[in-house]
Length: 320
Length: 113
Image 1 (cartoon, chains in turn orange, blue):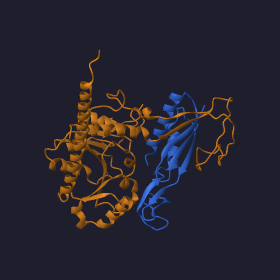
Image 2 (cartoon, each protein chain N blue to C red):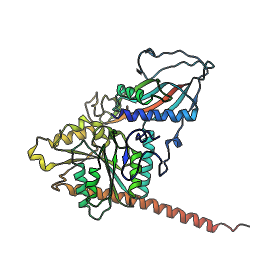
Image 3 (cartoon, rainbow over the protein chains, first blue to last red):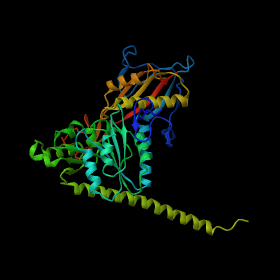
Image 4 (tube, chains in turn brown, red):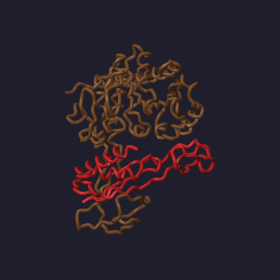
């Protein structure tokens, strides 16, 4: 069962397919990198937990602790795990990232609170990038309304409904990528579930998280939801055409974002009026050009290596 | 945040280990949760209890080891304690801090039978 996305246990749905099981493709599971091993204590030592095991389930302890075992009494033992809780998700994300790199695809993970204008921004972006291949993965708890809006622009889109889930994870995105049959040298835009908290922790294999903040929200969101603004490399300040009508301090918003993340790049734009879209589109074109160049470099170096090996083979004396 | 997914992730690691190392019951689970990881230990414990029902880890004690938040202050050129991801340097007040510790979310070890 895939507990990373809960498929099989709850109601994650991917258009045109089903995340719940019967996988159509293989995953390299994190097992490959596992380094857990058995660890038996051959002696008894004292229990020194400060808390009493009889009360409740959660105990916060200091980092140092000891624990007792009674070997021979039962087969009680200590098993070392030493694995990141998100290691499964991260293994799927690495797999997605390798696939994207091998095909020269720039993938961006768009995150924001609900109502920041992500879908409108995507529709505008697709129409303004006319000719450049863009595919979209839409994440929402319910409905395929957003994917339908994207498909109306002519771009391929797959909707993931997370059901009760509050974020996309790398496993769902891997399924959706397979569904989309992505073109080489293209853009993949992943619109995450509208939520400024949970998606911050889940790597999907994207090149960058792009956080969208609109001027109809509070300018202090970057410090209210610091994890997200810290995880993002770009902040799009959207709906700037509404600035005359709202009380939103642009400098304060950018200041808060840089306080949380000094490296964050800020682009101010209005998806509906077009202001600032040029800078955003240039960012996408530059990113795509780098992804394509990186792929080409890999291909070129592989070709060079093949040529070298062939030359070596040719210069070897014939057997016998 | 997303404590339910994290609890499921913990259970998945436990179930993998149970298959590989052949144990049937988990008595105690030690997690390392950094102070800057955004995880609420209480919520995680609640979710853990819910997702482990009927599994090898049903009824297991959850021990959460909090690891302190630390950051590198660029102004002071040294490691300082951090209580929030956008904290300020306790020595010089600078916000130019790079988080260096406290974002951990790991399963450390299990006591099993």
